[in-house]
Amino acid sequence: MQQLSGLDAAFLYLESSAAPMHVGGVYLFEPAPHIDFDAIRLHIASRLHVSRTFRQRLVPVPLNLDHPYWIEDPDFTLEAHLDQRTLPEPGGWRELMTLAGEIFSEPLDRDRPLWSLTFVSGLNRVPGAPSGAFALIAKAHHAAVDGVSGEEIIWALLDDPAAESPAPAAAPWRPESPPGLLRLLAGSAGRLLEQPARLARLTGRLAGGALRAATLRTLLRIPLPPLLLSAPATPLNQPVTGERLFRGAVLPLARIKALRSAVPGTTVNDVALAICAGALRRYLKDNEALPGKPLIAAVPISVRPPDQVANDGNRVSAALVALATDVEDPRERLQLIHDGAADAMTYSRAMALDKLTDFIPATSTVPLVRLYCWLKLAQRVGPLFNLFITNVPGPRQPLYLNGARLLGHLGMAPVFDGLGLILVITSYLDTLAISATACRKVMPDLDAFIGHLEASLEELEAAAGRGETTANGILHG
Image (cartoon, rainbow, N blue to C red):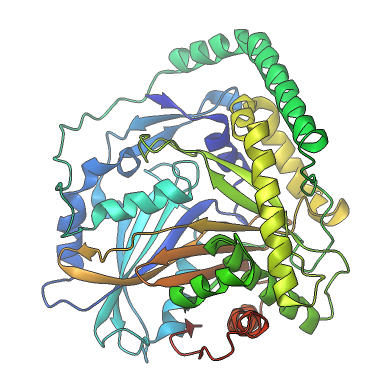
């Protein structure tokens, strides 16, 4: 039995019927004559040992007196987590994205391990994929995985023929009986007695973080990043409903890398943020809603040590980055994003914000989250920031699912009241994908935004003197 951390539990407290808190993705594979739903089921059954997430379920503490626990589910059945669907005609990209949006709209059942996989056939007209290709649509609760560990769990189902070591051998699995009421209450009482010491540690960490931030500001003269609640109001920042739209664009990675020369020191992540910023500027301008201040993005930062296992919950911090959407020149926008991202991440690491989430109290967090949603404070007090943009790098070598080659994938993450759009950047082989998950009520014209991603890339290339690069290789919808 393992208790959730404060950050892991926070994703449970944030969840509602209008805001399912799972992460996921769409994974597109080449056709293979031996691959069908039964073959996938058998393959996944052989890999359940690679992650605790597959067979662990929640045990809540009565009255939310403390954070829940994970146990090895004694009632686990693989079939409860697998589904199969066939795309309607013509079986193209649009039909696949629509199905993904429907699946991502459905909350996971908390009485089971918090994940699901849907096998999708009938992909007959997806550009870049042969007729007869298939897809997996995956989702897992954010309480169990962060973006990095969620991706690694999926990669663990896949094979890398060039890998020096094979997949880990299965270890004996031992289900657990749910703990009794007295054991749960005793654990909560023990943690309650620790609160004064925990509060003292929190105060010390806050003071240390503030001192390090002051040092960066005064001695090293690093500009302060944007503050919470400093973001401008936009149509993206309003209460959400439970219906999701999902779309994505797949871009040639070579074009992204070529743009790094436009601003010295620029990273692939900086360029991707600039492309997103340009698309946001175009989208809001078209809707006569472009604010005079720059949009503020929360950019998650993985703080997972290289030797730490992927199935131990969330290990992330976040930096607030101004997206320079008030700047018309694309090259200047890229420069400002590069400078701002570097400064924001420096402050985030100095203040060790990821450590503070360990002190999230269960008894006060649950009612506060519910009150926030009930009072619709997202509309009343202004956004904490405008959106999340997260980057999860993927492998550069081809991967296979039971012999079927992975062609590409898009990532998905949740939206919440006041944050009706989230962008996920992923990479695989020689491509970079930008996917958008949005509340249908907040952003019903998500297709328009996806089209602006291509235009944003092209205007950045023109500003960098790379107008000779053609648009071919872009897939979106």
